[in-house]
Amino acid sequence: MRKSKRSPSRIKYEETHRTFSFRVSKELYDRLEAVKKAESLSNTDIVTAGLGLYKVKVKAEEEVRREAYDKGWEKGNEEASNLYAVTYPCSKCRKEMTVTTDEEKKAIREFMVTNGWQHCDCSDPWA
Image 1 (cartoon, rainbow, N blue to C red):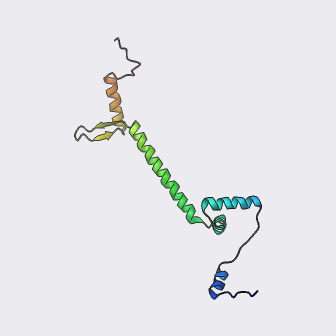
Image 2 (cartoon, rainbow, N blue to C red; image 1 turned 60 degrees about the horizontal axis):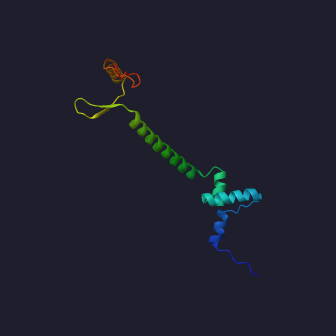
Image 3 (tube, helix red, strand yellow; image 1 turned 60 degrees about the vertical axis):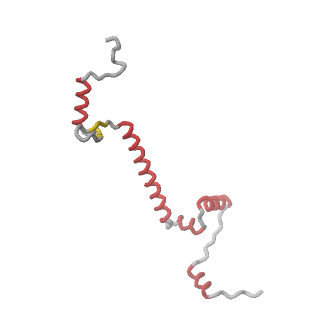
């Protein structure tokens, strides 16, 4: 059999892309194959990640996590606000206002006391 000649482009490619091989245990090989299949990675991607050079994907994952966290926080904050915020209409424009200042809270507290607000269990139905 005759050895085939390598083209100049093939020679240049092999000079810039070295072959790297090694042996691993059966357990490690099976684990590598499972990761490759689950994550759609190549052997080169796995080696690159092992060397800490695979930052593009890590950055993308961090951004996805941050976006998901921010969306969850906003949703939770909105739900809590809808459930627990105390609001009242403005006496002039009738737009909704939310109780936030200590002054507003004090005024509401005084109103409740002076107008006899109490727990349902505390009120005497026969009085």
